[in-house]
Length: 205
Image (cartoon, one colour):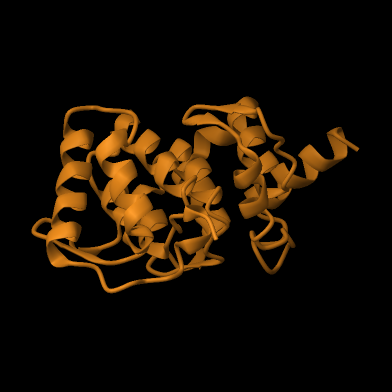
């Protein structure tokens, strides 16, 4: 079993190890580093449960590493570090999407974990419809919305370039866990997202 496959196994982790991990992650984020670096890599290899365990953070409460990066600064550095964690097996959560819905490139990155919420508590609708409300410009930005649709429809291929980096074979496998898009289930039938999706499918038929 490799590191990426162990993310669901939450081993008892020494509190000092957890503190060292989250402190180093926050430091690299604050220093605008765009890769995990050897120290974090080594900690993850030795303690794969770090990818899913909750940490107590003085600013954000109990969060996973992925949730922390979606709460903290929402910079290009946070996005790239998030991509690296997800590519090692970290899983997105509802909190991740709630904290970063205003940033489409974070949404793209979170989709790679294989999880997308259907309902979006607090906004009274389905996530994909709320996403379009928060990103009304997407309907006029064909390149960006097509990048998101390619992930949602599992049309992305290894080597495709996104803002956070290159799509890998592992990312492709995780995308298969996303729910199948269906009007009335994953999004509102006749809504803005549904219209864009139908237009995309028709133009690429």
